[in-house]
Image (tube, rainbow, N blue to C red):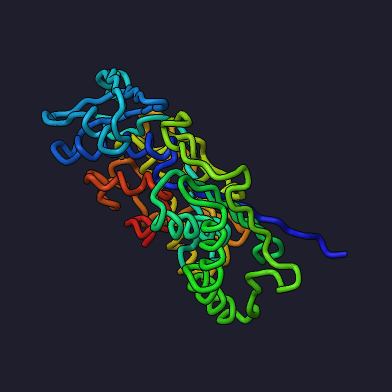
Length: 348
């Protein structure tokens, strides 16, 4: 008997409490970088039930940044508490000389399952979320489970939409929406490698199990019903639950923090190797010590075979920032649907 293989991933909408916190953190970062490209920013946000708390460290020449105004633009009419300090001089000393802002391990990943070089279940759950959010821009979640490469089940819970309408949207997505575009692209890709055309949906007799608002319809969402926190959706931000992550979040951190910039560089390297080697799957691992410029590990694993990353890449923090042009106000959009596979510079 063959072994069944299940793969599941979820996506959350920009109005989810955690994602609103991510966006506030990154919008504050963008505001500082707009005036001061060398700003040092590490901002965390906690929000819920009418209040937003902004804390962290900022050293910046920017004079016109209003964190409260930024928070209200994203979260609506909320009370805002701001408690920010300057970056620790001990940390600044190591970064000023070109070293990494902290220790850590960063993971890059790319695969040939989708045009975005991401796992199929990740892309499907995200595109479904975007498809629903375009019509109902509220708090919501989607989840897709594959069984042996086919869609087995779909879960969607969205604020201010009925179960009947939500189920209709899911079926529309499957039959003629973004799903069809993804399926066609993946089908062409697999055919070109001679592996045959995969099936994307279960047969008509069994069908796809659909769970639309399985706990019932709901109207209270976002900060009105739940609390949020910067960096709490790591798997949504990265590559889904079947790919390991280094553990550090991205949002609210300027590019001197390697848990952001080096993760972006690791993605760029993974995509490069995937294309150059015509590989199925590529993992990249970078590890740093605080205050040290060069990585302690720079490994690439190409279809299971490990190598040292080519010397053509400058993997120092300064080199990464220059290569990817990261001292720009580009970060708020990354906090909405994930940092990879959305057409950012490190995906190229």
